[in-house]
Length: 369
Picture 1: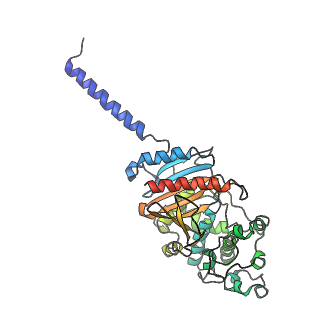
Picture 2: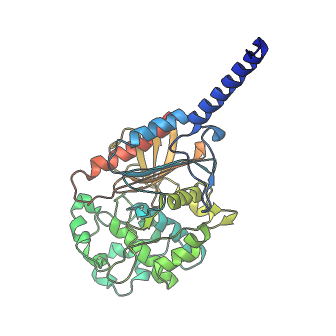
Picture 3: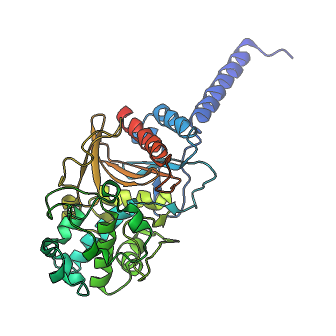
């Protein structure tokens, strides 16, 4: 039997609708769409959160060309909308966050002050290290405060600039350097990026709370957010390094970024005082490197162990680690971007170009939104 004209028309319409439906589904099946996991992160799509999928796809295509990037995640309106892993990494792999650790130390310092383990940002460094003979060292060191250390304005040397990086990396006990390292500037006067200062801040939190930094972080921060830390190196005295290298998964870093974007609250629980988050995002040093070192992230400034800058028309705050580790907050977009990457030796001549490539990738994404 030959179908009638009306029947043929119905078949053609049905076939067209099916083709459109399949095409639409194919277009939406991006490789970077996140999977739903029982880890406290809500998942949505880029379109549902007002993001252009093509812009995101182009960024992930660029990321595939980098041989050092591990992950790239995007959160919008508290939803994880994009996620992809590279170079053999997966959603379950934790890696070194390098100096992103410093921003975690900033959070823990705020909590320690809230819990009255530390009296305030004006408490003196010398209060926590009674084994140091402060009378026999530079008298200006007795004026260094917790605030100076969080601002990277303690006066202790910027290790990479003044040649102290090898000294630090060659020792597993940094406490004697409190008296041995000279002050390059009077406390509170100039910015000087210091791994030494960040680790000493971590020791202060541990000593004042009378528990290990890992225990303190778990009790007051990580456990409430469902964050596990498989590895965190410690020094010869058992103090976990505050300067870098805590291991976390990209999704855990995304949670940490969202915590700060939401003014210290997680699931209606005020984990970090909102006042501390606000204080951390003040500009204490408006000139850090003294020159532009990136194209898509510019005007670098510093708060309480957090960086700030601009990407296109957007002001950003970010935790930044060696190798290209980044947790970026874009408040006007209600957005968090996380990138992780291979963490090379600090003495590797290719370390900065590779780090820069990841940072520029993130910066380009933000400028296009």
